[in-house]
Image (cartoon, rainbow, N blue to C red; front, side, top):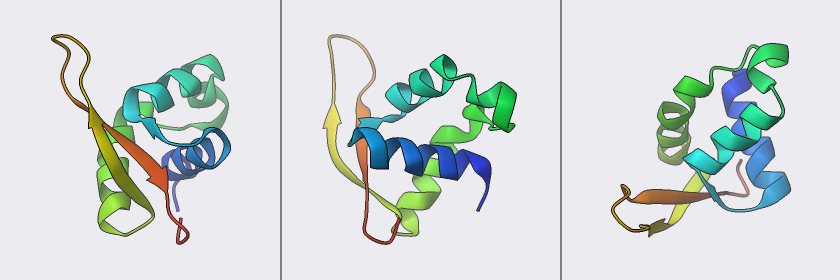
Length: 79
């Protein structure tokens, strides 16, 4: 398992359901890209792949104003 996946799963396990942008902000604040070599840019691709694999599940879609819709994910028992 790559570090981007571990960071995303760890974030969901610790903080509960989040959308990709919230996970990215947590990664930015903790400088995970610098100390862990995590590719935050690959986060959305990894979230979709983990959903297909059953590690995370989409629980809802949120839309605020004119911003694009955001999918909120939660970790599964398998994740």
